[in-house]
Image (cartoon, rainbow, N blue to C red):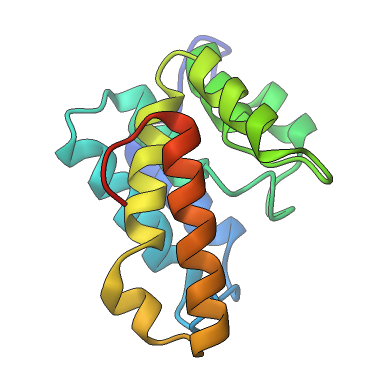
Length: 152
């Protein structure tokens, strides 16, 4: 592959699925289901190919499925890389700083909106114990507020 050949969305999807293989979400479901839902949410919201690629990779660095060094060298646009890094939570980072970085990065808000929408899906939350469900519902609502997103 030459340096100018970017990964296709199919290649990004396959790579993300491999990177998160064996991982499950808080409800015990295969983590790839969350990635697919976020990518579909970005697509449904009119997101670009760069945003859809970022959706597939949005948790890869945060979850140590792929390294930041890998991302830096990946055959992806800088915009996609910037979005992935924007939505990657950093240890000890206040939610306000996290939200500000997302808002300052072109395209990242749509990715995070789709992520929050899937995370807050009532059917998905229903599989969790009440204490976890309540904690996450509050966390997601707070982040939506910090990002200026309606509803929750």
